[in-house]
Length: 64
Image 1 (cartoon, rainbow, N blue to C red):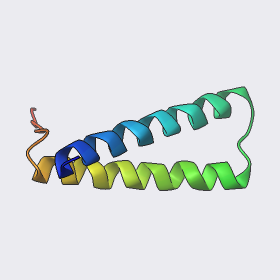
Image 2 (tube, one colour):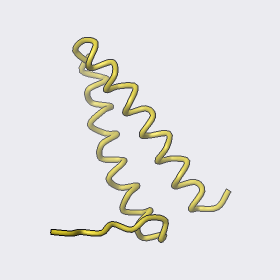
Image 3 (spheres, helix red, strand yellow):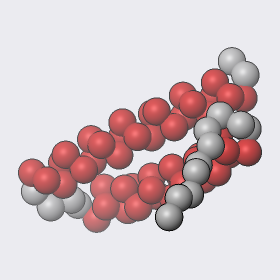
Image 4 (tube, rainbow, N blue to C red):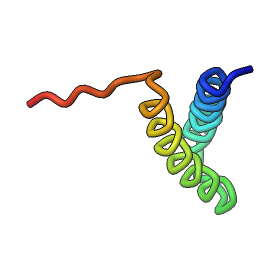
């Protein structure tokens, strides 16, 4: 698996994991461990988006 495929796979996995935690959050309060994991996933997703931009997988267009 090349780097681009790994980035995409990692991003999808992280999004799914974040979605599961958010669903859990809507049902009740998250334990501190899960809340910490959710915050780390947010950071990880931001880093992955940056790497995907650098690899040319995605483009972000800023409009006013």
